Length: 199
Ligand code: GLN
Image 1 (cartoon, rainbow, N blue to C red):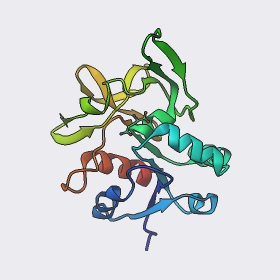
Image 2 (image 1 turned 90 degrees about the horizontal axis):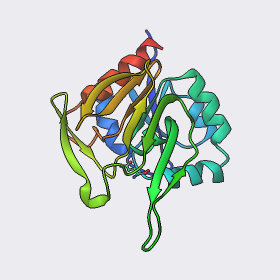
Image 3 (image 1 turned 120 degrees about the vertical axis):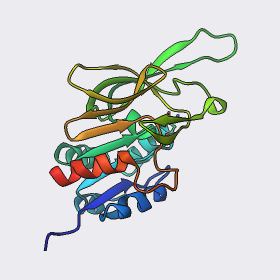
Image 4 (image 1 turned 45 degrees about the horizontal axis):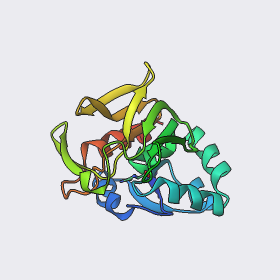
């Protein structure tokens, strides 16, 4: 009998457990992961939505950067919202304080997908909204905007003319959260599970 595949979700911060019913509906195991030892046991990674700056701090604090970078070379990775920011090649965000010029700042990332994302591109928390993506209801929560993708990145869905679901070999990113509905499994979880099976 073939072994049950296991999808790990990086569980330092953010929306983790809501992925479980989607993954289990696909007949796979789900595991929140946070140590180098956990990482070795999974066949694919979800980097969840949350706050990318907080996740970066925790990755640094626990000394996980190199182990994760090594694991990501070999396994499928799906970045969701903050997770998509962590795996983009280029990340920028604009900041403006009262009386100051808007400045562009850049942020460190694993650079797995050749694309440029703008953090909080749709605006602030009050600008969060739901959308129908390929017939499925999803949430954009202080989501980034994918401003540019390289030619070899496949755009699987767009929203307001910007890509929101992209695919690049073993890597996938969605700027929205598909895990918050009760309609299991989401088409995005199904697509990621297919990647893990193929790897
Ligand atoms: N705004 C967050 C960030 O910049 C992402 C929000 C989310 O993951 N829902 O990291």
